[in-house]
Length: 204
Image 1: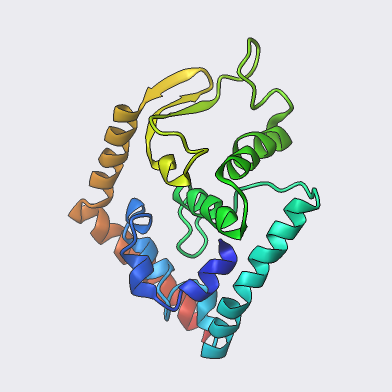
Image 2: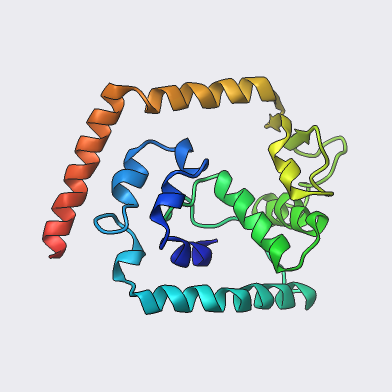
């Protein structure tokens, strides 16, 4: 997904108005990720660079699929808070790119829910049995049939604590409301905008 963003940054407006970008405070797209004054690699890229990234991206997907077919261990997860990559939402996008590369939904989910967790936290992850960590996501529709069903979360169990989907939605909305408060936006946009402007002056 980090490579995909290299050429996707050509369409800043599309990224800025995406549902994932709206999960974060306004100062991210307005200042930190702005294509001309933000802290983004696209500022260093020419039209030819954008074109090269876009034209070679299918080869990246082919290479990914080949490595998987050859038994190379693959894990999900990427740079959070990089250019228009939003934690959580960015992971779902990355999983869909794995499917686009040729993997079946169940293979993609096995990488993310079992292989990566076991790599990071131990072999007990990815099992439903007594003594295993109580870490799971409950869906109303089967994501192993279609990755679009990742959006049908009914509940999350984290460290043995059950969080129903309605509670998660309320929490998310409360943060959205906080980020959208005029005073919050004014303070953060002013501070971050000033900091980015100062860094640009130093760089110039």
